[in-house]
Structure formats: C-alpha cells, structure tokens
Length: 279
Image 1 (cartoon, rainbow, N blue to C red):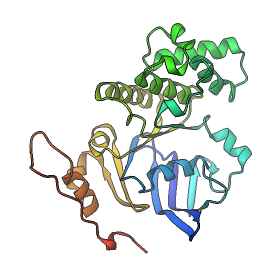
Image 2: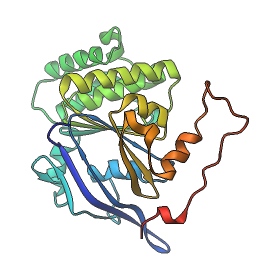
Image 3: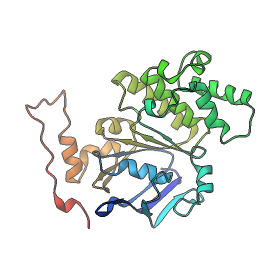
Image 4: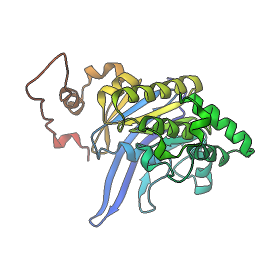
C-alpha cells in the first residue's frame, strides 16, 4: 500500500436517544492509501456511520471521538465548518446509494454536475459545461450533449448512478466514499458501474472506501476488507484471503452465501456470540 491518505485510530461515534447515548461505532481503526478498501457488515453494523463521520455529516447531537482522524495535513476531528467546506466534495466525495434520492428532480443533470465543479473552482459557466461534458464521457455515457440536458426522471438507474459518480468526480477529489453505490442496480449494470469506478481509481490514483453488505462483490472488487460487527472492526484482511478469515462472524457470513458449485438444501443461520462485542 502507498503512503496513507487517511488515518483513523480508535474512532467512537455515539448518538442521542431517549435512553441516553447509543454506541454506533466503537474503537474503529484503519488507514487508506491508493487502494480500494471495502467495509462490509450487516445493516446497523456502523459501516455507513464511519463514512459519514469522515465528512462530518452527523447531527450536532452526535458525539465523535478518536485518538486520530487525519486526512493529509488536516485533523478532521478538530476541523471547523469552514475547513470542512474545503474538504467535502473538493478533496473527499461521497457517492450515495440511490440517485433517485440524491439528484434534484427539477434540475437538468448536466447543470447539477457543473454546479459541483463551480462550487469549488472559479471558472466560467462555459468552462464548467466543457468539463461536465468531458466527465460525462469519462463515466462511459454516450452522447454527453444529449444527456446533459436530460432530467433525472429521464435516465435509467444505471445512468443515474454514473451521473452521480461524475458529479462526485468532477472536483477531482483524492478520496471517494461509495456507500452501496450498486445495490439498486441489476447485475449487468452493476458490473459497468464498478468498471467505471475501477478505471477512475487506477487512472487518478484515488483512495476508495467501498461500503457494502455484499461479501462476494467486495471480494472481487476491493483489495482489502474491513468486516464490521456491532460498530467494531472484527477483521482486517486482504480481499484475496477472505476464505482464510479467522473471526467466526466473517466465517459465518461466508458460510451463509449461496453457491452454484456447492448447492445446499438450507443455508446455515449465523449464530452470534456476545463475546464478539468488546466492552
């Protein structure tokens, strides 16, 4: 792995509830270099919370503590809102799960991509339009001029997701956080979107955090995997070595995956152990 772009050490995140503060992330540590890092786990494991914490997207009532939360020369833990405005989008971007809920329905998609560029760069609208057309082409959408003038309801799910990628990539960030970017897509379109992300990471030297619940997808797409359970990282392993995972939670997730080569009458149900959760 190259020199880390991001260093996270002993991250804790709590949210307020009627019964007091609830631990959502507990003691998470990892680094990110020029690589594709997968974060997997079931719903509620804390994987999306980690991604949003890096951009300070939690409500004011959330409590975030860490020994270290460092991006390049910026201490994300102590950075104020003005400093974060220079980080969000410009240096760290986040691709959300479903473009239906992320794109403005009454604004042309090209203008939305161009807006993401204009927020961070003092250029003319003519230059922003040119950059946008180039970016639409870079994410493998045919006829960029036509697509520029379309509204979100006129594009397919796969095209909408690539438009979201274009919007997040146009400011030329150093880190991309992709939160379940393909879960709403069918298999063939999913492969196209993953291929676009893979090319962009390799060509631009990015660090990618790929958040997913799909172990098989992460195994084939990412270089390294963090497995989260109950807000904690229980395993940090190379994607190619997942079959040799040591933690019983990871082993249970792998055992529950269906296989065409090894058909079973019934898939095993993961049996959880209270001892997996560190106090």
